[in-house]
Length: 543
Image 1 (cartoon, helix red, strand yellow):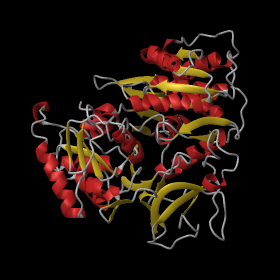
Image 2: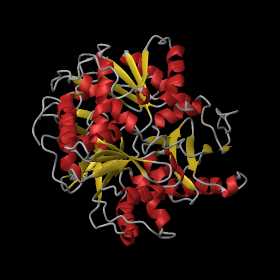
Image 3: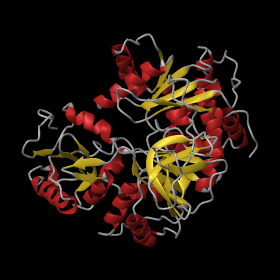
Image 4: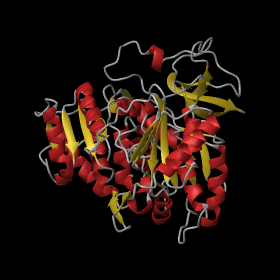
Protein backbone atom coordinates (compact mmCIF):
# COMPACT_ATOMS: atom_id res chain seq x y z
CA UNK A 1 0.00 0.00 0.00
CA UNK A 2 1.31 3.53 -0.76
CA UNK A 3 2.71 5.67 2.00
CA UNK A 4 0.67 8.62 3.21
CA UNK A 5 1.54 11.75 5.15
CA UNK A 6 -1.06 10.87 7.78
CA UNK A 7 -3.68 8.27 8.59
CA UNK A 8 -6.53 10.48 7.35
CA UNK A 9 -5.17 10.41 3.79
CA UNK A 10 -5.10 6.60 3.81
CA UNK A 11 -8.67 6.38 5.12
CA UNK A 12 -9.91 8.89 2.54
CA UNK A 13 -8.22 6.93 -0.23
CA UNK A 14 -10.05 3.73 0.77
CA UNK A 15 -13.38 5.54 0.37
CA UNK A 16 -12.39 6.68 -3.12
CA UNK A 17 -11.10 3.24 -4.16
CA UNK A 18 -13.98 1.17 -2.77
CA UNK A 19 -17.05 3.42 -2.48
CA UNK A 20 -19.59 0.59 -2.69
CA UNK A 21 -17.73 -1.91 -0.47
CA UNK A 22 -19.02 -2.53 3.06
CA UNK A 23 -17.00 -0.55 5.59
CA UNK A 24 -19.10 -1.39 8.67
CA UNK A 25 -21.41 -4.31 9.34
CA UNK A 26 -23.14 -3.42 12.59
CA UNK A 27 -25.15 -6.31 14.10
CA UNK A 28 -28.84 -5.48 14.51
CA UNK A 29 -31.05 -6.75 17.33
CA UNK A 30 -32.74 -9.28 15.02
CA UNK A 31 -29.40 -10.88 14.09
CA UNK A 32 -29.10 -9.16 10.69
CA UNK A 33 -26.48 -6.59 9.73
CA UNK A 34 -26.83 -2.86 9.26
CA UNK A 35 -24.26 -2.23 6.52
CA UNK A 36 -22.56 1.09 5.83
CA UNK A 37 -20.62 1.56 2.60
CA UNK A 38 -17.30 3.35 2.39
CA UNK A 39 -18.94 6.15 0.42
CA UNK A 40 -21.65 6.65 3.08
CA UNK A 41 -19.14 6.49 5.94
CA UNK A 42 -16.88 9.00 4.21
CA UNK A 43 -19.76 11.41 3.53
CA UNK A 44 -20.87 11.35 7.16
CA UNK A 45 -17.29 11.71 8.40
CA UNK A 46 -16.83 14.67 6.03
CA UNK A 47 -19.86 16.36 7.57
CA UNK A 48 -18.45 15.91 11.08
CA UNK A 49 -15.05 17.16 9.92
CA UNK A 50 -16.69 20.24 8.37
CA UNK A 51 -18.52 20.92 11.65
CA UNK A 52 -15.22 20.62 13.51
CA UNK A 53 -13.33 22.82 11.04
CA UNK A 54 -16.00 25.50 11.42
CA UNK A 55 -15.06 25.55 15.10
CA UNK A 56 -11.32 25.65 14.48
CA UNK A 57 -10.85 22.16 15.96
CA UNK A 58 -7.47 21.36 14.36
CA UNK A 59 -5.03 20.35 17.09
CA UNK A 60 -7.72 20.64 19.79
CA UNK A 61 -9.03 17.81 21.97
CA UNK A 62 -12.48 16.44 21.11
CA UNK A 63 -14.26 14.09 23.52
CA UNK A 64 -15.97 11.08 21.88
CA UNK A 65 -18.68 9.65 24.17
CA UNK A 66 -20.19 6.96 21.97
CA UNK A 67 -21.63 3.47 21.89
CA UNK A 68 -19.85 0.96 19.62
CA UNK A 69 -21.23 1.20 16.11
CA UNK A 70 -21.33 3.38 13.01
CA UNK A 71 -21.55 6.71 14.87
CA UNK A 72 -18.33 6.00 16.75
CA UNK A 73 -16.51 5.34 13.47
CA UNK A 74 -18.02 8.47 11.89
CA UNK A 75 -16.88 10.62 14.83
CA UNK A 76 -13.38 9.15 14.87
CA UNK A 77 -12.84 9.61 11.13
CA UNK A 78 -14.29 13.12 11.35
CA UNK A 79 -11.68 14.03 13.96
CA UNK A 80 -8.85 12.61 11.85
CA UNK A 81 -10.09 14.42 8.71
CA UNK A 82 -10.28 17.71 10.64
CA UNK A 83 -6.87 17.34 12.28
CA UNK A 84 -8.47 17.22 15.72
CA UNK A 85 -7.27 15.04 18.61
CA UNK A 86 -9.80 12.32 19.48
CA UNK A 87 -10.30 11.55 23.18
CA UNK A 88 -12.55 8.43 23.36
CA UNK A 89 -14.50 7.60 26.53
CA UNK A 90 -17.39 5.20 27.20
CA UNK A 91 -20.92 6.34 26.52
CA UNK A 92 -22.70 7.44 29.72
CA UNK A 93 -23.96 4.48 31.76
CA UNK A 94 -25.15 3.74 35.28
CA UNK A 95 -21.56 3.23 36.46
CA UNK A 96 -20.49 5.93 38.90
CA UNK A 97 -16.86 4.94 38.42
CA UNK A 98 -17.08 5.39 34.65
CA UNK A 99 -18.66 8.79 35.21
CA UNK A 100 -15.86 9.74 37.58
CA UNK A 101 -13.21 8.59 35.10
CA UNK A 102 -14.81 10.54 32.24
CA UNK A 103 -14.92 13.66 34.42
CA UNK A 104 -11.22 13.20 35.23
CA UNK A 105 -10.41 12.80 31.52
CA UNK A 106 -12.38 15.93 30.58
CA UNK A 107 -10.41 17.91 33.14
CA UNK A 108 -7.03 16.35 32.35
CA UNK A 109 -7.31 16.66 28.55
CA UNK A 110 -8.93 20.10 28.76
CA UNK A 111 -11.29 19.06 25.96
CA UNK A 112 -12.70 21.79 23.73
CA UNK A 113 -15.59 20.02 21.96
CA UNK A 114 -17.75 16.94 22.48
CA UNK A 115 -19.14 14.40 19.99
CA UNK A 116 -21.86 12.02 21.19
CA UNK A 117 -25.19 10.52 20.06
CA UNK A 118 -28.77 11.67 20.50
CA UNK A 119 -29.43 8.90 23.02
CA UNK A 120 -26.63 10.19 25.26
CA UNK A 121 -26.65 13.93 24.53
CA UNK A 122 -28.76 14.98 27.53
CA UNK A 123 -26.84 12.90 30.05
CA UNK A 124 -23.50 13.95 28.56
CA UNK A 125 -24.45 17.62 28.85
CA UNK A 126 -25.66 17.08 32.43
CA UNK A 127 -22.37 15.47 33.46
CA UNK A 128 -20.34 18.23 31.82
CA UNK A 129 -22.40 20.81 33.68
CA UNK A 130 -21.79 18.99 36.96
CA UNK A 131 -18.01 19.46 36.61
CA UNK A 132 -18.23 23.07 35.52
CA UNK A 133 -17.91 22.52 31.76
CA UNK A 134 -21.47 23.39 30.72
CA UNK A 135 -20.09 25.77 28.09
CA UNK A 136 -18.60 22.98 25.96
CA UNK A 137 -20.20 22.70 22.51
CA UNK A 138 -21.70 19.23 22.05
CA UNK A 139 -22.77 17.58 18.78
CA UNK A 140 -25.03 14.53 18.41
CA UNK A 141 -23.34 12.92 15.42
CA UNK A 142 -26.39 10.91 14.37
CA UNK A 143 -28.37 14.13 14.04
CA UNK A 144 -25.94 15.73 11.59
CA UNK A 145 -26.97 15.41 7.94
CA UNK A 146 -24.26 14.47 5.40
CA UNK A 147 -24.92 17.76 3.59
CA UNK A 148 -24.64 19.89 6.71
CA UNK A 149 -22.03 22.65 6.91
CA UNK A 150 -21.98 22.75 3.09
CA UNK A 151 -20.43 26.22 3.16
CA UNK A 152 -17.31 24.87 4.88
CA UNK A 153 -14.61 23.67 2.43
CA UNK A 154 -14.39 19.85 2.31
CA UNK A 155 -10.69 19.12 2.52
CA UNK A 156 -8.37 17.25 4.83
CA UNK A 157 -6.58 19.44 7.33
CA UNK A 158 -2.85 19.20 6.75
CA UNK A 159 -1.22 17.05 9.41
CA UNK A 160 2.12 15.26 9.55
CA UNK A 161 3.33 12.01 11.05
CA UNK A 162 4.23 13.97 14.19
CA UNK A 163 0.78 15.52 14.59
CA UNK A 164 -1.13 14.28 17.62
CA UNK A 165 -4.15 12.16 16.57
CA UNK A 166 -5.37 10.37 19.69
CA UNK A 167 -5.25 10.55 23.48
CA UNK A 168 -5.59 6.94 24.65
CA UNK A 169 -6.50 6.94 28.33
CA UNK A 170 -5.68 3.87 30.38
CA UNK A 171 -8.03 1.95 32.68
CA UNK A 172 -6.20 2.92 35.86
CA UNK A 173 -7.80 4.56 38.91
CA UNK A 174 -10.78 6.69 37.99
CA UNK A 175 -9.38 9.71 39.79
CA UNK A 176 -6.07 9.73 37.90
CA UNK A 177 -6.32 8.27 34.36
CA UNK A 178 -3.37 8.84 32.05
CA UNK A 179 -3.61 9.63 28.35
CA UNK A 180 -0.92 8.24 26.06
CA UNK A 181 0.05 10.50 23.17
CA UNK A 182 -0.45 8.72 19.84
CA UNK A 183 0.48 10.56 16.65
CA UNK A 184 -0.56 9.94 13.06
CA UNK A 185 2.83 8.29 12.61
CA UNK A 186 2.21 5.97 15.57
CA UNK A 187 -1.20 4.97 14.20
CA UNK A 188 0.10 4.39 10.67
CA UNK A 189 2.85 2.16 12.08
CA UNK A 190 0.23 0.32 14.15
CA UNK A 191 -1.82 -0.39 11.02
CA UNK A 192 1.13 -2.06 9.29
CA UNK A 193 2.02 -3.97 12.46
CA UNK A 194 -1.50 -5.31 12.87
CA UNK A 195 -1.62 -6.49 9.27
CA UNK A 196 1.72 -8.23 9.78
CA UNK A 197 0.64 -9.92 13.02
CA UNK A 198 -2.93 -10.90 12.15
CA UNK A 199 -2.48 -11.63 8.44
CA UNK A 200 -5.34 -9.30 7.50
CA UNK A 201 -6.23 -8.07 4.02
CA UNK A 202 -9.16 -6.52 2.15
CA UNK A 203 -11.14 -9.75 2.44
CA UNK A 204 -11.04 -9.55 6.23
CA UNK A 205 -14.10 -9.09 8.42
CA UNK A 206 -12.56 -7.99 11.69
CA UNK A 207 -14.91 -8.17 14.63
CA UNK A 208 -14.93 -8.09 18.39
CA UNK A 209 -16.33 -6.47 21.48
CA UNK A 210 -13.21 -4.89 23.00
CA UNK A 211 -14.00 -1.43 24.44
CA UNK A 212 -13.72 1.25 21.76
CA UNK A 213 -12.23 3.73 24.23
CA UNK A 214 -9.04 1.63 24.59
CA UNK A 215 -6.48 1.11 21.85
CA UNK A 216 -6.97 -2.63 21.07
CA UNK A 217 -10.67 -2.09 20.33
CA UNK A 218 -10.46 1.35 18.76
CA UNK A 219 -7.36 0.80 16.64
CA UNK A 220 -7.53 -2.95 16.08
CA UNK A 221 -11.25 -3.35 15.45
CA UNK A 222 -12.26 0.01 13.93
CA UNK A 223 -9.35 1.88 12.35
CA UNK A 224 -7.45 -1.16 11.14
CA UNK A 225 -10.20 -2.72 8.98
CA UNK A 226 -11.02 0.72 7.53
CA UNK A 227 -7.32 1.31 6.76
CA UNK A 228 -7.24 -2.04 4.96
CA UNK A 229 -10.37 -1.35 2.96
CA UNK A 230 -11.92 -4.36 4.71
CA UNK A 231 -15.05 -4.65 6.89
CA UNK A 232 -15.34 -3.84 10.59
CA UNK A 233 -17.93 -5.79 12.58
CA UNK A 234 -18.34 -4.01 15.94
CA UNK A 235 -20.06 -6.40 18.33
CA UNK A 236 -21.99 -5.16 21.39
CA UNK A 237 -20.33 -6.24 24.64
CA UNK A 238 -23.35 -6.81 26.86
CA UNK A 239 -24.64 -10.21 25.60
CA UNK A 240 -21.30 -12.00 26.00
CA UNK A 241 -20.98 -11.32 29.71
CA UNK A 242 -23.61 -13.91 30.50
CA UNK A 243 -23.46 -15.92 27.28
CA UNK A 244 -19.86 -16.49 26.09
CA UNK A 245 -21.06 -18.85 23.35
CA UNK A 246 -22.91 -15.86 21.88
CA UNK A 247 -19.46 -14.68 20.80
CA UNK A 248 -19.01 -17.84 18.72
CA UNK A 249 -22.51 -17.48 17.30
CA UNK A 250 -21.69 -13.91 16.23
CA UNK A 251 -18.44 -15.03 14.59
CA UNK A 252 -20.36 -17.69 12.69
CA UNK A 253 -23.31 -15.46 11.74
CA UNK A 254 -21.22 -12.52 10.52
CA UNK A 255 -18.38 -14.49 8.93
CA UNK A 256 -15.74 -12.84 11.11
CA UNK A 257 -12.23 -13.78 10.03
CA UNK A 258 -9.91 -12.17 12.63
CA UNK A 259 -10.43 -11.58 16.34
CA UNK A 260 -8.52 -10.55 19.44
CA UNK A 261 -9.90 -11.70 22.78
CA UNK A 262 -8.54 -12.61 26.23
CA UNK A 263 -7.81 -16.09 27.50
CA UNK A 264 -10.79 -16.04 29.86
CA UNK A 265 -13.27 -15.85 26.96
CA UNK A 266 -11.65 -18.72 25.06
CA UNK A 267 -11.53 -20.75 28.28
CA UNK A 268 -15.21 -20.12 29.07
CA UNK A 269 -16.24 -21.13 25.55
CA UNK A 270 -14.15 -24.31 25.74
CA UNK A 271 -15.72 -25.23 29.08
CA UNK A 272 -19.27 -24.67 27.81
CA UNK A 273 -18.64 -26.55 24.57
CA UNK A 274 -17.66 -29.54 26.69
CA UNK A 275 -21.31 -29.91 27.70
CA UNK A 276 -22.85 -29.78 24.24
CA UNK A 277 -22.04 -28.80 20.65
CA UNK A 278 -24.39 -26.04 19.48
CA UNK A 279 -26.07 -26.67 16.16
CA UNK A 280 -25.64 -24.40 13.18
CA UNK A 281 -22.27 -22.89 14.06
CA UNK A 282 -19.70 -22.57 11.27
CA UNK A 283 -16.25 -21.37 12.32
CA UNK A 284 -14.51 -22.36 9.08
CA UNK A 285 -14.07 -18.74 7.92
CA UNK A 286 -12.14 -17.81 11.08
CA UNK A 287 -8.49 -17.31 10.09
CA UNK A 288 -6.79 -15.81 13.18
CA UNK A 289 -8.04 -15.90 16.76
CA UNK A 290 -5.43 -14.02 18.79
CA UNK A 291 -5.54 -15.05 22.45
CA UNK A 292 -4.06 -12.01 24.19
CA UNK A 293 -4.77 -9.28 26.72
CA UNK A 294 -3.94 -11.34 29.80
CA UNK A 295 -1.75 -14.38 30.64
CA UNK A 296 -2.47 -17.25 28.24
CA UNK A 297 -3.13 -20.72 29.67
CA UNK A 298 -1.64 -23.78 28.00
CA UNK A 299 -4.86 -25.58 28.94
CA UNK A 300 -6.92 -23.06 27.02
CA UNK A 301 -4.63 -23.29 24.00
CA UNK A 302 -5.23 -27.05 23.94
CA UNK A 303 -8.92 -27.19 24.88
CA UNK A 304 -10.34 -24.41 22.69
CA UNK A 305 -9.16 -25.76 19.29
CA UNK A 306 -10.16 -29.30 20.31
CA UNK A 307 -13.69 -28.29 21.31
CA UNK A 308 -14.16 -26.01 18.27
CA UNK A 309 -12.81 -28.44 15.67
CA UNK A 310 -16.27 -30.05 15.13
CA UNK A 311 -17.55 -26.54 14.33
CA UNK A 312 -15.07 -26.09 11.48
CA UNK A 313 -12.25 -24.29 13.28
CA UNK A 314 -9.08 -24.92 11.32
CA UNK A 315 -5.80 -25.99 12.96
CA UNK A 316 -3.54 -23.04 13.73
CA UNK A 317 -6.37 -20.50 13.97
CA UNK A 318 -5.89 -19.94 17.70
CA UNK A 319 -2.64 -18.07 18.30
CA UNK A 320 -1.20 -17.05 21.68
CA UNK A 321 -0.12 -13.43 21.84
CA UNK A 322 0.60 -10.40 23.91
CA UNK A 323 -1.01 -6.96 23.72
CA UNK A 324 1.29 -4.27 25.15
CA UNK A 325 0.10 -1.41 27.30
CA UNK A 326 -1.95 1.52 26.00
CA UNK A 327 1.20 3.18 24.71
CA UNK A 328 1.87 0.59 21.95
CA UNK A 329 -1.25 -0.64 20.15
CA UNK A 330 0.43 -3.51 18.27
CA UNK A 331 0.04 -7.11 19.49
CA UNK A 332 2.77 -9.70 19.27
CA UNK A 333 1.85 -13.26 18.28
CA UNK A 334 3.65 -16.47 19.17
CA UNK A 335 5.01 -18.24 16.10
CA UNK A 336 4.43 -15.25 13.84
CA UNK A 337 7.24 -13.22 12.29
CA UNK A 338 8.24 -10.22 14.40
CA UNK A 339 6.63 -6.90 13.49
CA UNK A 340 9.14 -4.87 11.46
CA UNK A 341 10.67 -2.12 13.55
CA UNK A 342 9.24 -3.46 16.81
CA UNK A 343 11.48 -4.84 19.54
CA UNK A 344 10.86 -6.25 22.98
CA UNK A 345 12.99 -7.13 25.96
CA UNK A 346 12.32 -9.02 29.20
CA UNK A 347 14.39 -7.25 31.82
CA UNK A 348 15.05 -7.06 35.53
CA UNK A 349 12.89 -4.03 36.45
CA UNK A 350 15.44 -2.89 39.04
CA UNK A 351 18.63 -3.13 36.99
CA UNK A 352 17.33 -2.95 33.42
CA UNK A 353 19.38 -6.00 32.42
CA UNK A 354 18.01 -8.37 29.80
CA UNK A 355 17.07 -11.75 31.24
CA UNK A 356 17.72 -15.16 29.68
CA UNK A 357 15.06 -17.54 28.36
CA UNK A 358 12.73 -18.78 31.09
CA UNK A 359 13.55 -16.00 33.58
CA UNK A 360 10.53 -13.79 34.42
CA UNK A 361 10.88 -10.04 34.30
CA UNK A 362 9.20 -6.86 33.12
CA UNK A 363 8.29 -6.59 29.42
CA UNK A 364 9.74 -3.55 27.65
CA UNK A 365 8.75 -2.68 24.06
CA UNK A 366 9.82 -0.13 21.50
CA UNK A 367 9.04 0.70 17.90
CA UNK A 368 7.39 3.30 15.66
CA UNK A 369 3.93 2.64 17.14
CA UNK A 370 5.02 3.39 20.74
CA UNK A 371 3.58 6.56 22.27
CA UNK A 372 5.99 9.34 23.16
CA UNK A 373 4.59 10.16 26.60
CA UNK A 374 1.52 11.03 28.65
CA UNK A 375 -0.61 14.09 28.09
CA UNK A 376 0.28 16.79 30.60
CA UNK A 377 3.11 14.65 31.95
CA UNK A 378 6.56 15.93 32.81
CA UNK A 379 8.87 16.71 29.93
CA UNK A 380 11.30 14.03 31.13
CA UNK A 381 9.51 10.80 30.18
CA UNK A 382 12.66 8.66 30.20
CA UNK A 383 11.71 6.51 33.22
CA UNK A 384 8.59 5.17 31.45
CA UNK A 385 8.68 5.91 27.72
CA UNK A 386 12.41 6.03 26.99
CA UNK A 387 13.87 3.39 29.26
CA UNK A 388 17.33 2.07 28.42
CA UNK A 389 18.36 -1.56 28.62
CA UNK A 390 21.54 -1.90 30.67
CA UNK A 391 24.53 -1.74 28.32
CA UNK A 392 22.14 -1.54 25.39
CA UNK A 393 19.74 0.66 23.42
CA UNK A 394 17.12 3.03 24.79
CA UNK A 395 13.70 4.11 23.64
CA UNK A 396 11.77 1.32 25.41
CA UNK A 397 8.32 1.65 26.95
CA UNK A 398 8.07 0.01 30.37
CA UNK A 399 4.74 -1.81 30.14
CA UNK A 400 4.35 -2.88 33.77
CA UNK A 401 3.60 -6.41 32.49
CA UNK A 402 5.50 -9.50 33.59
CA UNK A 403 6.65 -12.06 31.07
CA UNK A 404 9.37 -14.40 29.94
CA UNK A 405 10.80 -15.71 26.71
CA UNK A 406 10.84 -19.34 25.62
CA UNK A 407 12.82 -20.13 22.48
CA UNK A 408 12.74 -16.47 21.61
CA UNK A 409 8.94 -16.22 21.90
CA UNK A 410 7.41 -13.80 24.39
CA UNK A 411 4.83 -15.00 26.91
CA UNK A 412 3.02 -12.75 29.38
CA UNK A 413 2.77 -14.14 32.91
CA UNK A 414 1.24 -11.35 34.97
CA UNK A 415 1.71 -7.79 36.14
CA UNK A 416 4.66 -6.27 38.02
CA UNK A 417 2.71 -5.08 41.05
CA UNK A 418 0.25 -7.95 41.29
CA UNK A 419 1.92 -10.26 43.82
CA UNK A 420 -0.06 -10.52 47.07
CA UNK A 421 1.29 -11.37 50.51
CA UNK A 422 -1.44 -13.24 52.41
CA UNK A 423 -0.77 -14.92 55.76
CA UNK A 424 2.91 -15.22 54.90
CA UNK A 425 2.14 -16.74 51.47
CA UNK A 426 3.01 -14.98 48.21
CA UNK A 427 0.11 -15.35 45.80
CA UNK A 428 -0.11 -14.42 42.16
CA UNK A 429 -3.74 -13.32 41.81
CA UNK A 430 -4.07 -14.52 38.23
CA UNK A 431 -3.32 -18.06 39.47
CA UNK A 432 -6.18 -17.84 41.99
CA UNK A 433 -8.53 -16.34 39.40
CA UNK A 434 -7.76 -19.08 36.91
CA UNK A 435 -8.53 -21.79 39.47
CA UNK A 436 -11.84 -20.10 40.26
CA UNK A 437 -12.83 -20.23 36.61
CA UNK A 438 -13.49 -23.96 36.85
CA UNK A 439 -15.02 -23.91 40.33
CA UNK A 440 -18.64 -24.01 39.16
CA UNK A 441 -20.50 -23.60 35.86
CA UNK A 442 -22.54 -20.73 37.24
CA UNK A 443 -19.42 -18.66 37.93
CA UNK A 444 -17.66 -16.30 35.54
CA UNK A 445 -14.70 -13.97 35.96
CA UNK A 446 -13.13 -13.21 39.33
CA UNK A 447 -10.78 -10.65 40.82
CA UNK A 448 -8.76 -11.15 44.00
CA UNK A 449 -6.80 -8.55 45.96
CA UNK A 450 -5.73 -7.70 49.52
CA UNK A 451 -7.53 -5.28 51.81
CA UNK A 452 -6.14 -6.41 55.15
CA UNK A 453 -7.16 -9.94 54.15
CA UNK A 454 -7.75 -11.77 50.88
CA UNK A 455 -10.82 -10.41 49.09
CA UNK A 456 -12.51 -12.38 46.29
CA UNK A 457 -14.98 -10.67 43.94
CA UNK A 458 -16.63 -13.38 41.83
CA UNK A 459 -19.17 -12.90 39.05
CA UNK A 460 -22.21 -15.19 38.95
CA UNK A 461 -23.29 -15.64 35.35
CA UNK A 462 -26.54 -17.40 36.12
CA UNK A 463 -28.67 -18.37 39.10
CA UNK A 464 -31.53 -20.84 39.15
CA UNK A 465 -34.59 -18.84 38.24
CA UNK A 466 -32.79 -15.70 39.34
CA UNK A 467 -32.94 -16.83 42.97
CA UNK A 468 -30.13 -16.06 45.40
CA UNK A 469 -30.95 -18.78 47.90
CA UNK A 470 -28.49 -21.20 46.31
CA UNK A 471 -25.50 -18.84 46.36
CA UNK A 472 -24.02 -20.01 49.71
CA UNK A 473 -23.18 -23.34 48.03
CA UNK A 474 -20.80 -21.95 45.35
CA UNK A 475 -19.46 -19.56 47.99
CA UNK A 476 -18.48 -22.52 50.13
CA UNK A 477 -16.83 -24.21 47.16
CA UNK A 478 -14.80 -21.07 46.44
CA UNK A 479 -13.57 -20.87 50.04
CA UNK A 480 -12.68 -24.56 50.08
CA UNK A 481 -10.81 -24.38 46.76
CA UNK A 482 -8.70 -21.40 47.84
CA UNK A 483 -7.86 -23.01 51.18
CA UNK A 484 -6.92 -26.32 49.56
CA UNK A 485 -5.00 -25.00 46.56
CA UNK A 486 -3.26 -21.99 48.10
CA UNK A 487 -3.30 -22.61 51.84
CA UNK A 488 -4.96 -19.32 52.81
CA UNK A 489 -8.33 -18.29 54.14
CA UNK A 490 -10.67 -16.01 52.26
CA UNK A 491 -11.33 -12.89 54.31
CA UNK A 492 -14.16 -11.46 52.20
CA UNK A 493 -16.12 -13.14 49.43
CA UNK A 494 -18.46 -11.12 47.24
CA UNK A 495 -20.67 -12.77 44.62
CA UNK A 496 -21.69 -10.13 42.09
CA UNK A 497 -23.55 -9.62 38.84
CA UNK A 498 -21.88 -10.00 35.41
CA UNK A 499 -20.07 -6.85 34.35
CA UNK A 500 -18.70 -6.02 37.80
CA UNK A 501 -15.36 -7.73 37.13
CA UNK A 502 -15.24 -8.04 33.36
CA UNK A 503 -16.60 -4.56 32.69
CA UNK A 504 -17.74 -3.29 29.31
CA UNK A 505 -15.73 -5.40 26.92
CA UNK A 506 -13.21 -8.15 27.42
CA UNK A 507 -10.75 -6.35 29.63
CA UNK A 508 -11.12 -7.06 33.32
CA UNK A 509 -11.47 -4.17 35.74
CA UNK A 510 -8.04 -3.47 37.21
CA UNK A 511 -7.52 -4.86 40.68
CA UNK A 512 -6.47 -1.49 42.08
CA UNK A 513 -9.70 0.08 40.81
CA UNK A 514 -11.89 -2.75 42.12
CA UNK A 515 -10.12 -2.59 45.50
CA UNK A 516 -10.83 1.14 45.59
CA UNK A 517 -14.52 0.51 44.89
CA UNK A 518 -14.60 -2.19 47.55
CA UNK A 519 -13.09 0.06 50.22
CA UNK A 520 -15.53 2.83 49.32
CA UNK A 521 -18.47 0.43 49.66
CA UNK A 522 -19.38 0.64 45.96
CA UNK A 523 -19.31 -3.06 45.01
CA UNK A 524 -22.93 -4.15 44.73
CA UNK A 525 -23.39 -7.76 45.74
CA UNK A 526 -25.76 -10.66 45.25
CA UNK A 527 -24.25 -12.47 48.23
CA UNK A 528 -21.43 -11.50 50.60
CA UNK A 529 -19.53 -13.35 53.32
CA UNK A 530 -16.91 -11.95 55.71
CA UNK A 531 -14.49 -13.94 57.81
CA UNK A 532 -13.65 -13.24 61.46
CA UNK A 533 -11.90 -9.91 61.87
CA UNK A 534 -12.65 -8.80 58.30
CA UNK A 535 -14.40 -5.47 58.00
CA UNK A 536 -17.47 -4.99 55.87
CA UNK A 537 -16.95 -1.80 53.86
CA UNK A 538 -19.87 -2.56 51.54
CA UNK A 539 -22.79 -2.30 53.98
CA UNK A 540 -25.85 -1.06 52.16
CA UNK A 541 -24.35 -1.95 48.82
CA UNK A 542 -26.49 -4.98 48.02
CA UNK A 543 -27.96 -5.07 44.56
